[in-house]
Image 1 (cartoon, rainbow, N blue to C red):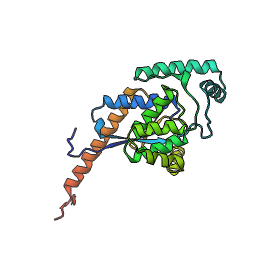
Image 2: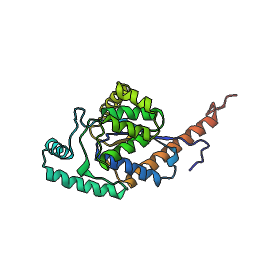
Image 3: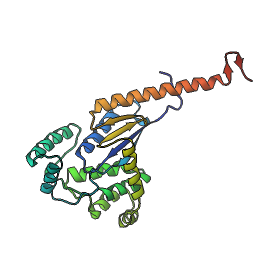
Image 4: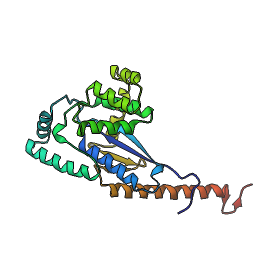
Amino acid sequence: MTDLADPPRLRVDVWSDVVCPWCHIGLANLDAALAELDGADRVDVVLHSFQLDPRARSTTPDEHVEAIARKYGSTADVVRGQQARMAQLGAEVGLDLHFDRVRGANTFDAHRLLHLADRHGRARELKAAMLRAVFTDGEAIDDHAVLRRLAVGVGLEGDEVDSVLAGDAHADEVAADVAAARDLDVTGVPAFLVDRRLMLPGAQPPHVIARVLRRALDEADEQAALLGADAALGDCGPEGCAI
């Protein structure tokens, strides 16, 4: 492969929700893929908001299971069985999932805080903290005290966090993310858009994500090499080169 003085970077856009277990697993799979990828330092991960249920309300763990069962025309026992399998999948990538603690919650304010965190380069850290709070600790992710503690815990200023939670800051960014997902026909999450052209839906295994990222990096390198060769030719044509 051609050596590049300034190799191109690769962008990965990710739509996810903080009460989505598959999103938790999918993001962990992405981290695992990046850990084994040569060139991972050239990959920029950009998080985007997505709400599975914009009208969701706070519920207890039992109410949450019943709500999922109603949504998918299933039963609480079937849902718990599916959750047990998800917990096993999560354990394979280092996640400690306790579905018996998970509460239903509206995630709008959480997403607004994630946009604040993004401005300070802390979005991925805050997203990870929120997912652990929901799926490991069973915290209510629509509780402003919980959100404030998590945000301050990753380095955000308390006063700035309070200001966001007290108003409607970053609501437009959340809406823009949701609209972008709709334009891309994203109806479920997680959804990974690689290099603005290749969509990977769902919680793909780490080796699949790594293979796609490797291919995208190789293609970007090849394209950059071709452009570099064209630039080196200058204004040359079949009859010679202009001076």
